Image (cartoon, rainbow, N blue to C red; front, side):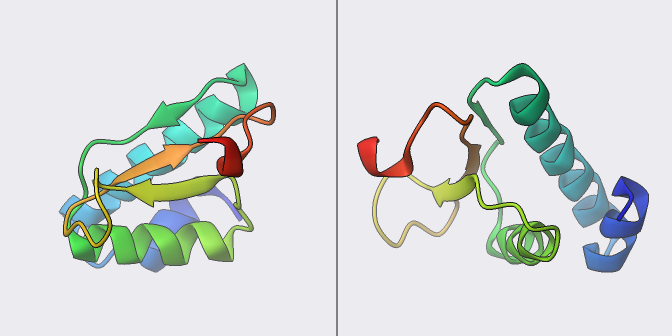
Length: 88
């Protein structure tokens, strides 16, 4: 599915659409340049929309981290092929 279609499908408002577009840009950068990338802190609504969109798109190289377990605001972290989540 195209980027614009994904953003429209999962973005509830204009701000969320911008955030989701940025998330997809970071994911693409991770894939094409093979580098670790991360977003800024996301609200719980932005996180939920991003998780739904990435799951729908079949992305599994991402995890969400806020500095401690159960953090309210988290960043999306995209892992390149050479980094294993278990080793972080």
